[in-house]
Length: 342
Image (cartoon, rainbow, N blue to C red):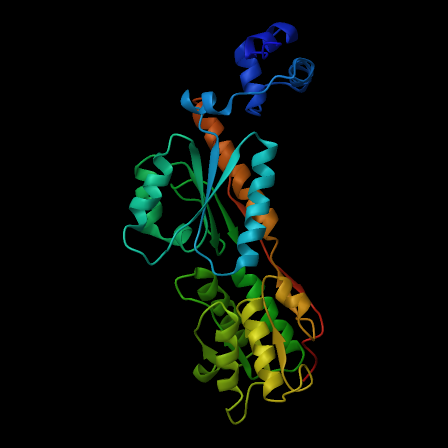
């Protein structure tokens, strides 16, 4: 039986040090393209299989942990795909770890995940990423992480983040409805512990005020990021006299619930009631009529957050003080069939 090739065999055939082979396998950017090609050619020729377990035991943590608490399965799946794509491109593995944001011992659970010798760092999504307590404690303990957060934020001492400009996107959505002639525009928010809900509401109110439209308390309803919450709140809105002529829902699932409630009440959409969602999820494309929404590129956002984290991890391993810059995204309005002029 032929003996398995070792990393030293690869180094000898490629004419490099075994440390260079290790850097190439770990996708570290410090190795030039020509050298990488030579090493990969030797790996292929020898059919060398890196021993992941051995690498982990030597302290080369190779897993990225995706931390989330979000009932929207579409959001979670898109985030997973984006993170996994970037992990695979850089020689890392993905650990998916859902956490109850309302549970006791939240910080302890995150620290336990981060202390695993296989974990290189954490990708934090809302609401964890937007909790000052969580972020500060993780930073104090030396945990490597990136955050996905709502709002255009200035750089801070807690490391790189990916921010989504929900405020500006919500402003443009509301401005679009106003441009169609709507003045009684309802807002259906999500859970308030998610800053996306708060920030989108702020953008909505700012657009109303910029157009001399007074926001009415009875048209701004807090709730949850789910279908039933959208249905229940829309039923309530449709009992008002007069009812709103447009609804800005904080995500597509809420908007789909609003559309369902309108159909039950025999309110034609968009002729009598325009509805806009947010995120451009399958709910927006599978409903009838198809929902006008704001496209939020979750896979790309996840890839970017993962790339920032890997850059941070590699800089730390190499003992450099490289600054990893924040990255931002602005969801873009997509006009479909659920809105029309007043």
